[in-house]
Structure formats: structure tokens, C-alpha cells
Image 1 (cartoon, rainbow, N blue to C red):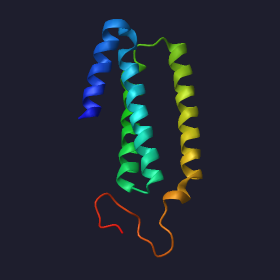
Image 2 (image 1 turned 60 degrees about the vertical axis):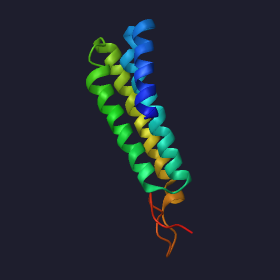
Image 3 (image 1 turned 30 degrees about the horizontal axis):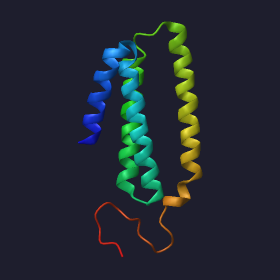
Image 4 (image 1 turned 60 degrees about the horizontal axis):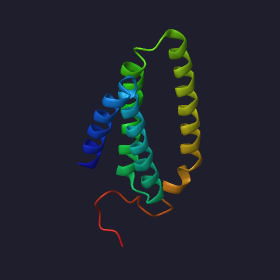
Length: 118
């Protein structure tokens, strides 16, 4: 509920004060939520949180490519694609570096979302 409410409020506020940044600002907010979900999933070893964070990052990337960049001039679009590619590369590298934190240890099942945990 908070995700939908904060998205609607941010979009409404940006449309009033910075209409050219409304869709981009929404993408930034969603990326922050995705990062929080991903970090929580890694920290607490919860696969559903990690997968939700990664899925939301995918939605943000698709939205940025197909909607947010559609109205930019060619030079800015190329620069934005280069910057996004670099950020995705850094994110993938960082994810691989912390992968051992959420992998199950020998004989220990990975904690999911709603199991009986001791």
C-alpha cells in the first residue's frame, strides 16, 4: 500500500513542480524501493525479497528504456544508455560479490518467506 501511495504522491508533486521529470522521478523512487528489497533479502537471507527487488529493478529498467528515454534527444539517449549499462554492470558485479551471504550453507536450507524458522 505504501508503495502505491508514495508513487502516486511523488508523481502528483512532480507533475506540479517539475513536469519534465515526473516519469524519471518515479523511476528513481522505484529503484530505491528495489534496492531496499534487494538489500533486505540479502541481509536476512530471504529469497522472496531478493527476487521481488530484482523483478522491480527489471520493471524500472524497462520503464526507463521504453518510456523515460523516448523523449530525449539522441545524444542524451546515448549517454543515458551508457550510464545505465555501467550501473547495471556495477550492480551485477556487486551482487556476485555478496552472493555467498545468501547462499545456503552446507546442510542448511535457504530461508524463504513464510516457513517455520527456529
